[in-house]
Image (cartoon, rainbow, N blue to C red; front, side):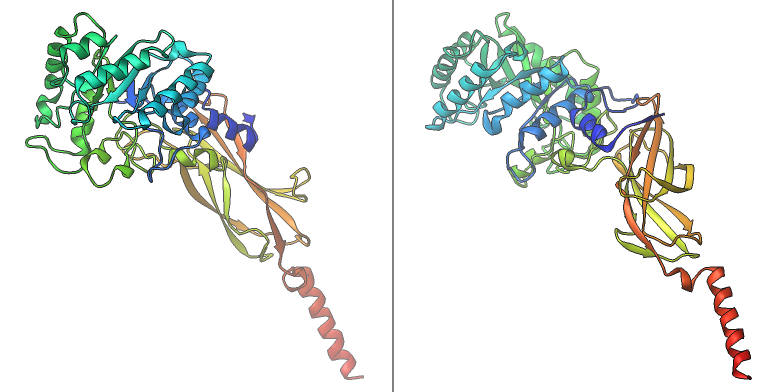
Length: 443
């Protein structure tokens, strides 16, 4: 059994240097996802949050990421994460809308490319997303933007993402590769026909690409929201579509990694594999860690909820020690609950319990709780007559931590109730004094 400090484990989890504990499931990992580096409220994720998101993707089996814009310093931070974990690529986007922001976006891309030392992890560059389909630009205007980006692309291939019905011959000619967004849901296709619709449209489109590489730059299925003809949003239908994709050989990017609540109440805010709180929606290899944005803030290791810091405990009475511990996957879990003379937990007083068995964590199911609660009832012994410190140490052996892992809580400072009012010795002294008082009253 290894003892690992909370700081060490925090760094390990924040880095996610190895895969998080997951189990085999009926749905395999998706290998490509789209990702927007924003929180649920639309604010930018921090650098550490972006890196943590990418590492969680890696741990969940994702190897390809597609983005839409150069916002939030997303590309430099994604490349930084990829450099750490290896085996991943990114297909970054440049958001264009025909405004003065276009040049600023391209400049941000250029800056990211100039500063990166692993641009070989970049699959290609997407200029715009459905700008022709949404009547934002003509094909000629888009071709001009593609050529502008090619001048600063450092030899990386440049293309765009459009729906399969809006590619023109001049756009295909200008593109080094073709990105196509294919959504059977928006084609009002029944879920039973969704994958065959995707496959058929991809192969039809591929014939018009003139031998160029074709990527399905978006495809997905919403878990809730309004129906689109025969296409019904539901968790069951999302899972069915994900399952079909996960076993296919199509070059896809699933839309999308997490729900985008900042998009409003429309259907597009319900396509995520994770909900806005960071919880996996489906029984797929995604390890729930609350909200991704809270990963860097989370205190790893157990925490004592009760008794609270600086509380008084009744000597000779009973106290419920309520604690919260980490879910690190299915396995054997136990706790050591101990008393210490000092806050540095170097001088032990006694062990309340050692190797006390507790409920196992898990890493499968519709919802996987990252934290679990438990209670141990402690009979407070006589003899505690000074301030002391209480700790709970969680120990787990799982498929991931085969040699065991041990994490100790922060110590909680406690005070015993006045011993003179509780101990048997004190009662004996009081009784003796009472007898003497009575005897002397007769003298």
